[in-house]
Length: 267
Ligand SMILES: NC(=O)c1ccc[n+]([C@@H]2O[C@H](COP(=O)([O-])OP(=O)(O)OC[C@H]3O[C@@H](n4cnc5c(N)ncnc54)[C@H](OP(=O)(O)O)[C@@H]3O)[C@@H](O)[C@H]2O)c1
Image (tube, rainbow, N blue to C red; front, side, top):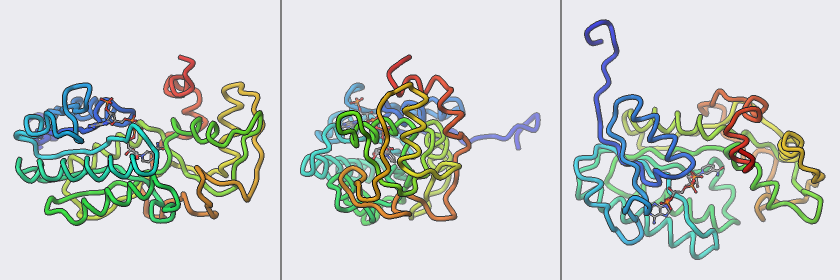
């Protein structure tokens, strides 16, 4: 406690790699509101984790680096090269700069989704972090509400959206950013933390609710044999463990918020 009974926060320099993205931009705002020196680093601001451009300068004096990048291409070989190269470069520059905590955002169920090249790349990213000398926390989040449109679009054939009935426990990007911010300003776990949404849905049910709210005429068909992004999923493939930290925002509430209009491209 400081003067006037206020909690004092130790101000840190926190570099958010991917700071212009969906999660990164929200995270940078939240950290700055708390008084931290948050740097939004990405190619748009001259920091590139593939070429190394701008990394040494951005990391000077930083205590924490948060990796919320994503690969521009999800093609199998391209996405693997992206996450391996980007992670290796970040960790090497962090070691040189004396960074004390590397935080990375990954996906719940990654080890159950390795039939997908994207998840093999996320697993490679996680393994590089675990093997490095930098104290770390890997945050595995469930699918963002903002991503539900992408799930429906990928599963669309003509006017039908064909999805399995497996469970999904999605969360708002804003709640992901809040959770990442809490972890980034805390001590490294040197392990994994799971975050998820407050409710479980069936994949087909979730897509149906999203399309109905957006007056989208596509019909959602529940097909137990359908795949999730090309991967066979069972009941709990996408669901976090019981000890996951849960976001507060419910899907029905989010659907009425500006973030949902922005995700649908109708704002
Ligand atoms: N979608 C989901 O439901 C979900 C669920 C769980 C976890 N995740 C994970 O969450 C992470 C963030 O996702 P997001 O949706 O927030 O990403 P996003 O909006 O696509 O943003 C990607 C960010 O990566 C940056 N970037 C791209 N290439 C870079 C490079 N060479 N060097 C530095 N930065 C680079 C981009 O910078 P520019 O803008 O400058 O190009 C942008 O800031 C991903 O790793 C993803 O796997 C996603």
